[in-house]
Amino acid sequence: MRVTIALAAVLLAAGCNNSVTPTEQLPPATPASTDANAGQWQMLVLSSATQIPVGPPTDAASDAYKAELASIKQAQAGLTDAQRETIAYWSGGAVLRWNQILREQVARFNLPPAPKPDGTYPAPSAANPFADPQFPFSNPPYAARAYSYVTVAQFEALKAAWAYKYQYNRPSPSKVDSGIQALMPAGDLPAYPSEDAVLSGVNEVLLKLLFPAAVDDINRLVGEQRTAILLGGKAAPSDIDAGVALGKAVAAVFQARAASDGMRSAIGTPAQWAAFVTATQARGEIPWQSLDSPSRPPMLPFFGQVKTWAMTPTDIVAERPQPPPSTSSEEMRQELADVKAGVANATREQVAIANKWSDGAGTYTPPGHWNDIAAEYVRDAHWSEVRAARAFALINMSLHDSAVGCWETKYFYYNPRPTNLDKSLKTSIGLPNFPSYTSGHSTFSAAAASVLGYLFPGDAAAFTAMSDEAGMSRFYSGIHYKADVQGGHDHGVRIAAYTIKFARGDGAN
Image (cartoon, rainbow, N blue to C red; front, side, top):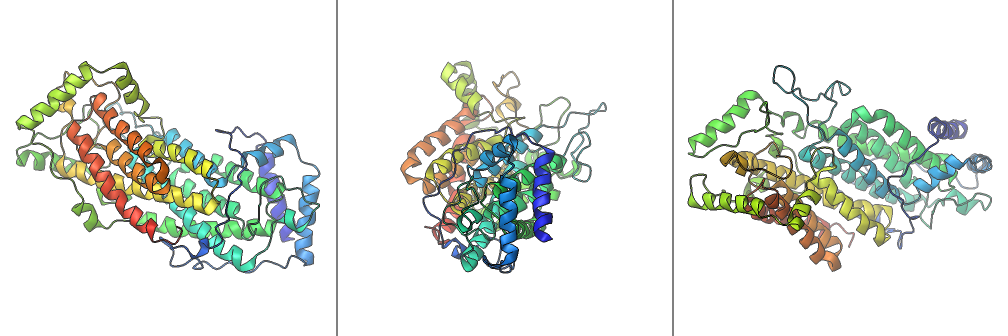
């Protein structure tokens, strides 16, 4: 009965939406190594790879498993063109595909709320995600957190899956029964629990948590993925059931972490926003102010207190950059003059660089830009799913910790942007609604480039060049001083060092 129900559920999911529109064609995944020891790699959140129990599968020679194989052969005999497209769509590596999907969701919801007639701005509500404005506003800090939760959870869940795969060693259906077509690459990796199903379970829980208004899309995608691995001969229904259960259980651990990580308090209150201005003026400095009309509340001023991955709150404070130039100093006057001259004399190439890295509303944000860069290198490395997940987890740990460190710095100093000091200055891109020092782009980019340089040392110089370009793009566009760019760069490198320290000792090298 279980086999029949599981297969029927997968085929029903496929029938609900028979069209798949790939955002990018991915070549069939052919890992150079299975990373058989990945179940022994160090965990980040779980206490061990076997914290969540996964019971043994039925024997491959049992009647129950033979019935599963027969159901797959029967389903493959009547494959439709749409189902073959679904199989092809998910054959390029589920880690890469889910990263694309995550970036799409970030871009979809990266829209700042419009003001109400009375000049106030409504805040998106997780309790009513379909209201106007829809939840969330996936701005850069929110996006960095979302990327990190999903990718770190995927990594933890796959390490757990690998531990059980090599404990039970049950081959994929197409390896057991030659009558089953291998329409998806399976290799020699044991099938139970299914790594693809693990990822679908993680994403089903966490993407709905982070992007609840996208629930229909998420349900469709997880159903299509499970369809693909079953019809592709890569996983039997029991492989899928075990994988989904494991993925959801791991995601629940991360869901509990997210509930108490400080994000709910990151917006603050009007009284707290006013206190930033008062404290800055008391130091004799000119405070940042929103130049939106009507004035918009500052973006997530308490994100600097959100829980990090590789750093402690003490580390965040210890790594805070030194103060920016005083707003009354000659150094700041020169910084402003440099910005004005840079904007007035910007070359076509510099304008193009500013636009290339703008990553504003409606995009997948600066952290997403670095995920996109990373995806090409991960794809071409031909890594196992668990090693690919490690790469994205490490990158996004550093990006999230950079968001926390950068936002803690921004609101500690509450430094004005060039346009606050000279309202005649015209920026070439949209003006971010938060303080100037340090540059988020510079911090994000230096951190991501450092981790990518660790993962792909032969390309470290190229990543550094990209990071430098991203940082300077903010100066070219007139929204940051050079001090912001340099301070953010140095900060991002220091923050990434914490993630790299973990990576060097996690057993995966």
